[in-house]
Length: 374
Image (cartoon, rainbow, N blue to C red; front, side, top):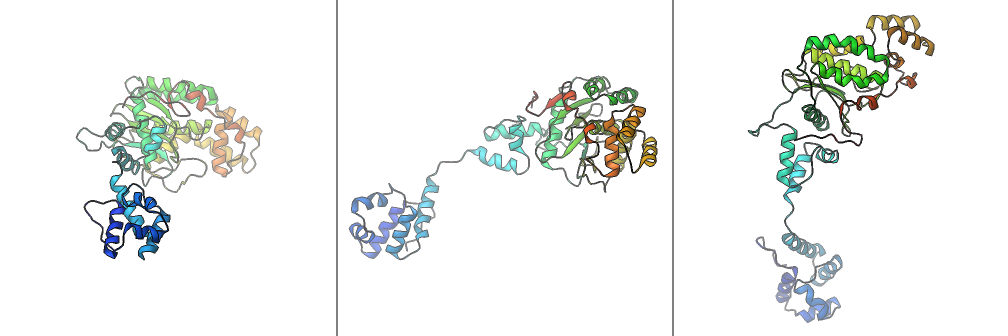
């Protein structure tokens, strides 16, 4: 067969005509061989009609060669004459390979557009420095695995930071925050009191933001810093329960008080629901977990209650102990579930609180897109 040009691809009809010349055939001869009229064959030879799979098989029989040869001729010609793709296609592909761009667009965090605009939005979203180098953001986050920071979690953290910049807050005072802990503790008995948490924290200089997680991003909370004196707590309320809310909040507050998350990223942790892996825990996480547990129910008193009542915990016992501790019964239930590894136990007391906190905090998700400037 006649070779194919590597510079410019001619219509397949040109190659068919060359084959006819090489064999001493006319167009009328080929029409006869194919069982067609010259009028039917002419558009194919002039390039006005494409070679279909059926036609490729006819030509393969006529010229005693593989039908794929003629389909390849047509494919190369069509590809050469196809219009140039939108540059945004490559930009989206490269970005999607590293970040959850589609989910970010769906959530309204960035807007789809031409390549340069999309790249600009991503650079601003992830706080890329003006010199083109990355701006490493440290954070201490409660999530399932810490050997890596999955893209969906990383994007969530930066969304928290983005929204936190718009939250008004007093100057950060560790002393004021410690003094506010008893007030926060007094709210733990009433799920609706969660609504007052954002303002209490803002008075201490801590910004609280609530952001729904992206798909497959199991993350409960984060402590990050806009600068050395501007702590931010992000919460996902992934598990919308009163016990989870207070444990995660107090955990992150301890990170703030200890100054965790200023200089490190990707801290190990285990807290992410009923089946979380608790085998690996960093020193910082141990400190934060202990503070959170003791805040909800003093560890010594919880140990004593558990030892006295185990293995039979009646609903009346739980309600009575919760009243004695000044907490909502769901707090006690959460502790017992974890110790007994019975996550169905008295679950009715683990009431949801998300609706109360989002009423007062800057919130993004659950059908709501928070206003933000990139």
